[in-house]
Length: 172
Image (cartoon, rainbow, N blue to C red):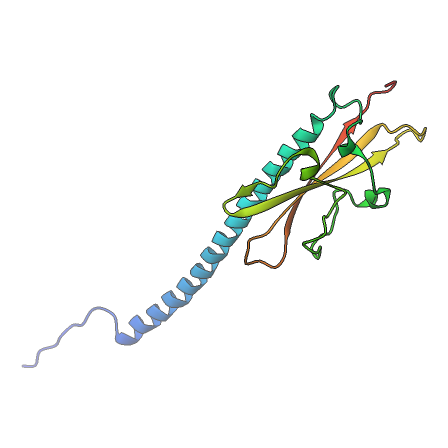
């Protein structure tokens, strides 16, 4: 009498095919997770830059002694009217590091560049005089706060721009 063995389980070929499929999918997941970590860190830097930009915007708003109706402080001078058309849509990707990207910098009002997690965030702002009624009276100062930063190993800057207006009520 001969015995018959019933074999159950997987063949070596099936196991190898399953391992190849698993390895290929694992490589894809690792690539996605690496990019996720990078974009998460970049998102954090943008959040921090936005926070520093908002802080500067608040500081600028408080430079007006009467809540924004007068623009006496030198920080509100529109020293370069030729750049008013680029407020809020500034393409600074190729800006040389030595050139400031705007008319004013934080040192003018006694601030220093904040540092967070070893990254220096530089803050600038640009001012545009707006004569809404075409009567020769500046009713609005449109201000774009620009924050730029880069990690030490990066060759290019990243930018965040916050734009707001300071309005002068009629008759003042």
